[in-house]
Image (cartoon, rainbow, N blue to C red; front, side, top):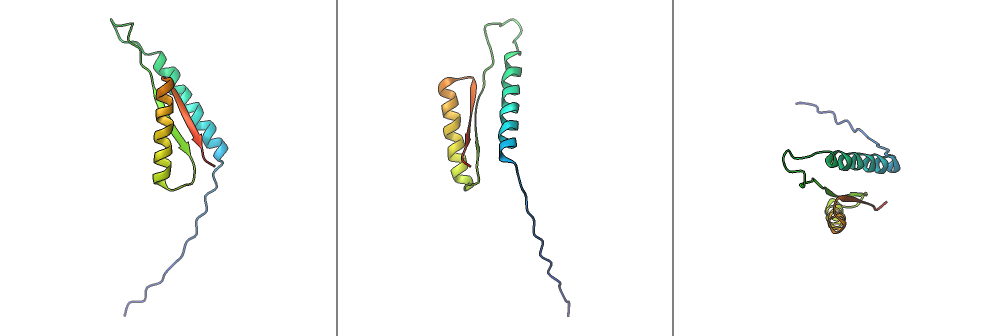
Length: 88
């Protein structure tokens, strides 16, 4: 007879949501400013833009995806920007 031993592990994760939001804002701002610097050779009239949507929350993934989609469309209305929704 094989004797199996079960071990339980508890794991806690503490995230500073404010820091995550600040980091996300910083990274998206960086991407936006980087895209502005890109030019297409022989076509200076063409410029790259971006629209991003993001959400910070602890809800069901399906709810977060829906809110992220709304944030994206909000950004697309303005164009060349990003929208972050904080649900916490």
